[in-house]
Length: 182
Image 1 (spheres, rainbow, N blue to C red):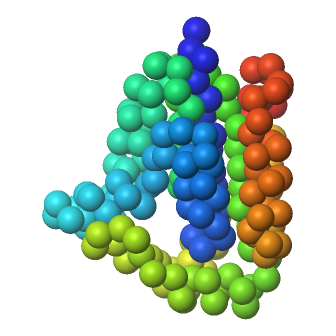
Image 2 (cartoon, rainbow, N blue to C red; image 1 turned 90 degrees about the horizontal axis):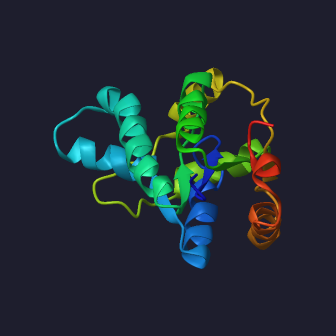
């Protein structure tokens, strides 16, 4: 049995997923799998934006499975806008027999969300973040989550969100209670 844990982040672009995921990975030593980074590498190697989405998730699943089998904690940093994307992570959890935590980031203040999207600068070589219009298009297809999860309103101070995240992730409960499906 694997003792690994998959921490699945989801939420629209610009809601703070990567900021929180990066800090959590740094402080815990977890493996941080960032879909933007995988897609960026694919685009630098000739794939177009419409070719990278599903492929990037597939690569992330395979890499995560390897780390989870080794008992490591993996942070999956992705928008996960639709059921199929989320089912991919759940399938990985089932096949890896690992714990599963789900974190959803939201920024309900539209003006603040737009400001973040329009002013952020990429830290990834060659990566261009989506425009506000593209984020709005993603919002139209983003299916509401119904699974057990921690929802973080990132309009609050970053430190407040991070403390809440750390309390949720702290491995003090058994695997059944940590399962993001339940």
